[in-house]
Image (cartoon, rainbow, N blue to C red; front, side):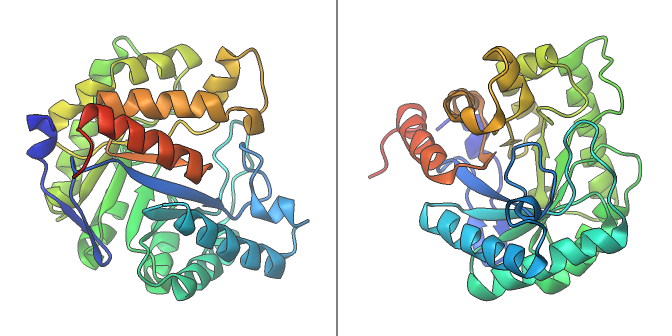
Length: 291
């Protein structure tokens, strides 16, 4: 275990203490959407029937838990390029029943909510979510941070930009995330409740995404746990000549292993079983086989 990882304070997420550096944790994705980029949006796969989608969300979360997921991340708005914005009312209708049903079925398993809307995040906490995943975590608006502080839940700050324009990608991502950490702590979020995400696939070109993965270890300078979300992303399809999302598993596993070697503490994935296995082998190489 590297000193950089060992120095990071553990984070209590719900009832589970996450000891960073002990191993890599796996976050399973449950998309309650009709238009997920990865093709797994449950409102689409069950022809838009909300009751069936809710049952499918619980079944998917159960399967992911059985396969070794440490966290379930529930989202109700697609973030694919060109997606249609979702109203607050619609996102609440999609997300809150799913969070409540998954929490009822798996009360100990931490649930995160993937949203940029504080109102949705607050309702999700009431329904059982214990972690906020903010894809606009570097925004000057500190409303999500103030909510995390008030409710005592950890917060993932993801890097994002409206336009993929940089003079020095890695330095600017680091600066943006450092400023976001400062804002969140000023809003009252304890340092041990903050997780950073470089935003692979968000506000970046394919070349940017590959560079940020290549230089992921630079994020260790922030002194926070690192979440990496590369699963099925379009950059992987770009590298492989245009293969569709459902055919990007091997590419995802490559980025999981490389990310862990560079310092990732959590990997956010669609295919839990395969990524858990890749993470365990990567951990054995990087950290040593657990006793």
